[in-house]
Amino acid sequence: MTTDKDLCMDGQSATAIFAAKGTDITPNKDQGVVKVVKRQGVDGDRPMIGDKVTVHYTGKLLNGKKFDSSLDRKEPFCFNVGKGQVIKAWDISVLSMQRGEVCMLLCKPEYAYGSAGNPNKIPPNSSLLFEMELLSFEGEVLTDDGGITRRIKVKGDGYTNPNDGATVDVHLEGSYGGRLFDSRDVRFTVGEAEDKGVPLGVDRAMEKMQKGECCILYLKPKYGFGREGKTEYKIGPNKDVVYEVTLKDFQRAKESWEMDLNEKLDLAAGVKHKGNQYFKAGWYHQAIILYQRIVSWLEMECGAGMEQQKRIQDFLLISQLNLALCFLRLKEFSHVVENCNKVIELDGRNEKALYRRGEARLLRNEFSLAMEDFQQVLQVNSSNQAARAQISICQHKIREHHEQDKRIYANMFQKFAEHDAKVGKMKRRRDESVKSDENSEVGIKRRRRSQDCP
Image (cartoon, rainbow, N blue to C red; front, side, top):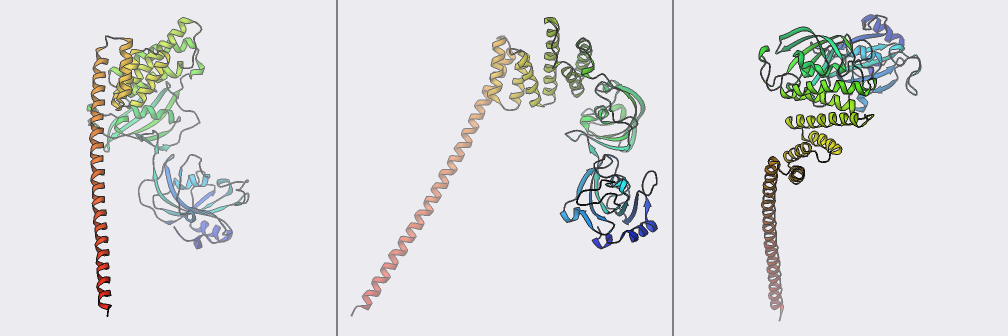
């Protein structure tokens, strides 16, 4: 970045400099944001809409008064570009920059703080000067585990997005290692994209997109083709892939509150069947989406009569049990316990829920809790041999754990004893040394007295 001296100019000289050297970077070329490049950035990629960018900046009024600076705070500023998190001038200018670039910006009020200004800092209707350095940028992460990263090439229209169950028309271009392996127009239902050979990551990104949006999705293996890969595309196991996706059109599905209970129950049967198909095929993430859809429809519903209430409870029980089984396959044991608990709230003697919760707890090394679950299974069904076998495993694991604790504590106490013995030995040596020194000093004094006697 440059020094404050570079921004110390009056309004007239600033306007002259920007008029001579500046470039209008506003979309409609109204001179609202004029840019002068002071240091060229690294040739190559530029930020895209939604990217997380990191910048340093200094802002001044046209009279040279500084009102803000990240450099003074010694801390760069981060924001998602093109999302309206900052003034319009910044969104426009950062999209034009390269990594490492330093530029100066002259911004009209309508691209800065407008007629309101910023109390105690910026008067109303103020044009502003900024010096900005683009330090870095990265795509927008769409999932908690970082498995899907999005970079928006073309912003979509409107404020609505496809929802779960929506029908979408998209154009896909999939690539791996720079090689295009998939290019097509396809229509699919959000949550059921696997039916059309569309990866899970593309499906999950749909609910974040707007009509007309074109984005690049960087998919980790979990959201691409997983551990199996895709032989027809010549993609091996555990490979990252890239998809460029254009959302051409979509039709939203009915929300839960837009359907009556009978409609939900009728649809739930088909969703459950499709979820079971996904589970049998080993597509556990896709099956989870469908089972969770049923739960979201019915968990707050109350039937008009005993028969309808029983149908609701049956769907909820089987969906929660199937969710627990999917999460068990995916080794997400906390979710297994959570779903089993919901089943047990509805049916405290549900054999499958107790058994699956026991399995999850055993795999989490919660041996005592797991054994309690398997014992409850036997109370429900005394002939369940699998539960008996699991109890034996739990008992063996508990004994192993106790033996390990004994060894650890035995070694610990041995070390304590050795340490105490060592400290005691050193103390005795010190005491003997002090006593020896005292005896020696007494002897010297006696000899001196004897020599001094007449």
